[in-house]
Length: 450
Image (tube, rainbow, N blue to C red; front, side, top):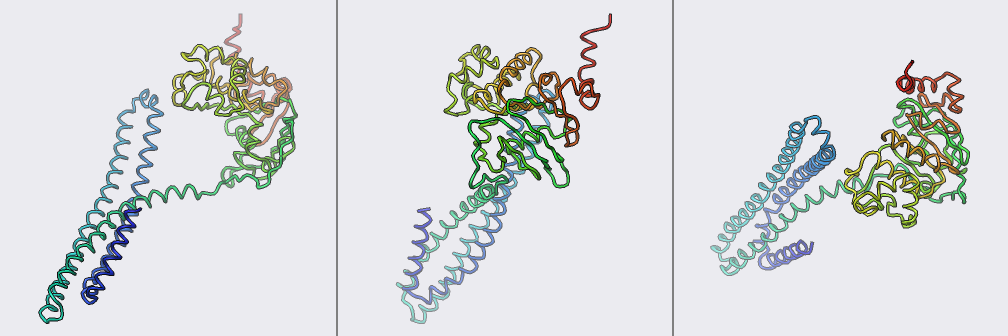
């Protein structure tokens, strides 16, 4: 930026000097400035578009590369290396073509500037030579003007080069500011209502309506209440709206109608950070960060001490496998926990949630990815940790929810059945059919007829 300012200042000083020496010669040579401005405008328009295209293609290439590296095992298992390499090559070639267009723009712009500078000198020789022959101009004045003209076009060339860099920076900044200027869909309230303390752990859905896409409702007038300390399970077929309930409870989305309340406070009126500290969610797809085991449990929260980390790990039966790792709780975790088994990652996610001692515990398909032996450990930990704590369990595997106080059966975004495990089986409705589908074959295999 300092160099650009210096070039502009130098250009202005030389321009004033040329006018002072001989304003008639200056006006003649300045005839090339309008064409030069037109060339610069054409270059700016063309190169800005080219740089925008390049930035978009860089983003596409990086996105594909990240996806391919993350899914390298799937690519190898399904023998898709050639297809992946071909797709990467196609994106690389598209990026190269975009860069070539910027080089082409650069290639015509600078010769055009030099050509116009040469034209200015030619005009000066023509007009100045005639003035010398007429005796209206001395040779000394002319040579002084001619030499200064070289100095005049030198900063123009420098500014032109920096102008090219500026176009690249502007194209990049447009993408950055497009993200920064994106308005948040969920805005924290200006004057949030405080959640009551101590936390009770009460959850209420009051005639909740919600749709991800207009005209395609996911929840239709859903109403239920979870009392403090109660364990409630939510079951239903895929797409019934189970996970959406959890997203609305933690205010990842806002309801389209009705209200969701935690301890009597509408989640839209509460501070999102305070709300999410009160609700701990264990997801089916566990995300682990690069770092160590302890850091993936604390997530940098200074309130979660080492003692709480170890206590939470013991409670969910994760302490044993953690201490068996090379460096225990300080063992490095690779990206997305690549060196840990699915069951181990799931246990870490339980420890992460339990270390915060939440008032409300949410398990979203949390045991669907673990094997039978690990599930037994997790189920034992869940049973003990849910005591005295409100719990909402979303599950496909009905074996994990038999002990829940109530079960809500969702179907097409509505609560179709409600009751305990035994009551719903005796009713012979949707839940009973789901149970039969899951356990009939297993029970026949486990207890064959004599």
